[in-house]
Image (cartoon, rainbow, N blue to C red; front, side, top):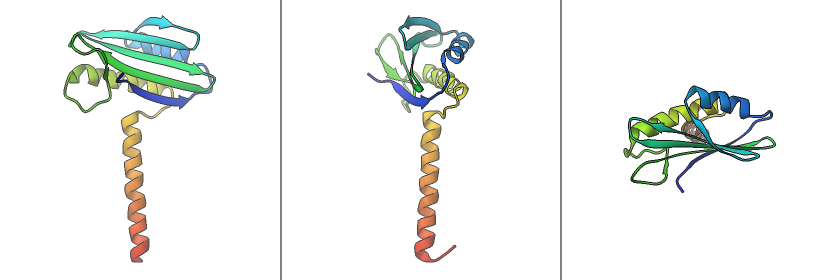
Length: 133
């Protein structure tokens, strides 16, 4: 299964935030269990269905997103593939807005931050070794 997954901590109930987000982006609630809900919407541009599954157990939150189309059953939304680029771009923007509403950092931004920190620390180490400040 190709799903983009983000895990975070949230001290309150996430459901009011998630419901507001789903309404704003026209997602419909497809399934609901005690701690998990799955939303989806159809992307009219590409006949793709964008899925977002959200679960919360205590303060642990897990958000999974993917899309399906007529050819492939499940594809990550957060990918560099050019296949179905438009629904992927839409889905990434929408899920990133949900993450922002929950105070989380989107996966690509986390990756960039790690790379910046790695480069910074590498530079500091080189300066220390070379005796430069």
